[in-house]
Amino acid sequence: VHLIILDIMMPRLDGLSTTLKLREEKNIPIIILSAKSEDTDKVLGLSMGADDYVTKPFNNLELMARVRSQLRRYLTLGDVNGQNRTSVINSGGLSFDLESHTLTVDGDPVKLTATETKIVELLMRHLGRTFPAEEIYERVWGETAYSVENTVMVHIRRIREKIEINPREPKYLKVVWGIGYKIEKI
Image (cartoon, rainbow, N blue to C red; front, side):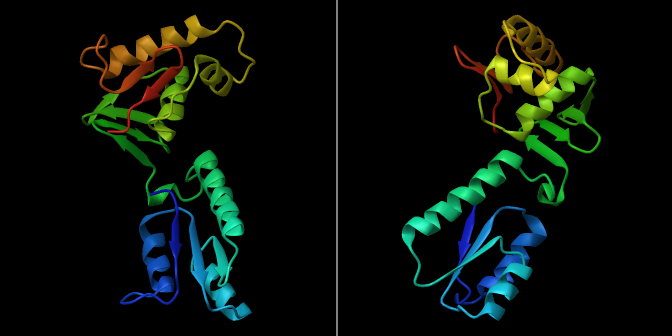
């Protein structure tokens, strides 16, 4: 789930209480969609943790634009501020701590170089997304990429040797032939 749309007037638990409960665990975009259109209702909804407030009746195109805007911000920036109340990203046996910049495999710490750590962090922050070698290079090294496939490939191979049981048949760090590299969301 990347985004939640709630109505304030829901059975059992109302939208405001649901927003509070969600904010205890998650930092994903929440849009309140409600017939309550008073300014005080909007202010209350936004102060309870909603990211946006849309009143009924609403324009479908406007709602979709607001959804796309929230998703773009959330998926591009991730959970930078909230980090889902945890600073650890998990995928199967891989765990990356965003605060200490450490990686463990099945609980065992993995010693990575600074560059390897940056590559792993990039891929862990975007589990399942395939990054071309050029984009990895530009994001990690901060320079324009010119014929950098071998440089990135060498670092990927070294990371695989450290995290995979069988680096030739990787479970976590995969290549998508002709496109790039990704860490699987397991």
